[in-house]
Length: 117
Ligand SMILES: [Zn+2]
Image (cartoon, rainbow, N blue to C red; front, top):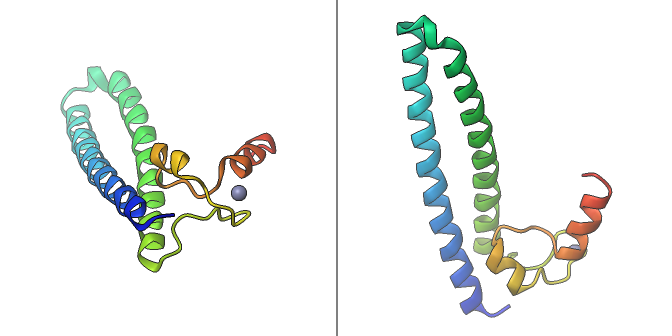
């Protein structure tokens, strides 16, 4: 892969990382507000609990993605960014443009999903 392509993908990763960090911060603040509201108003307890559950599952996803992005950024720093971690073939620039933190090429990803992992 050309270094210019890698640079562009790294910038994309850094932008996404910032966005996710912001989202998590916001979600955490909302959760804190909800927790406070629950103490103050017993009547809304059930509704708030449902919202908290939805929020925390979104947050879990974001934390997971953030980890994958940081991992990809580390690989870019050490020069390991680009090849599939399963078969060693290039992941492919088109795939990386859509998902710059992809670890596997599309072939490995699909056989992964078929096997239920
Ligand atoms: Zn592969």
